[in-house]
Image (cartoon, rainbow, N blue to C red; front, side, top):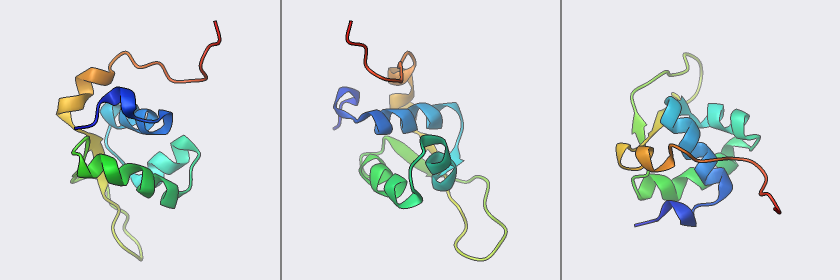
Length: 91
């Protein structure tokens, strides 16, 4: 099982966002400033480890595959409650 301390800053940022509200990969990509394919690669291991879950949620009503909402697993949601995101301080 992965410990939260072993996750990268983008992974922790994604978990923090998904703890607040379910969102799609595209929404996460826009908020994280990453490409959708980068977000999919980032989330793959976290989905496999059940740190995040796919849920029923908002879907696109257009051409292509429907969007799938994601949320943080309840087992990790409490562990990231006081997470501070941003550049590391040298102090």
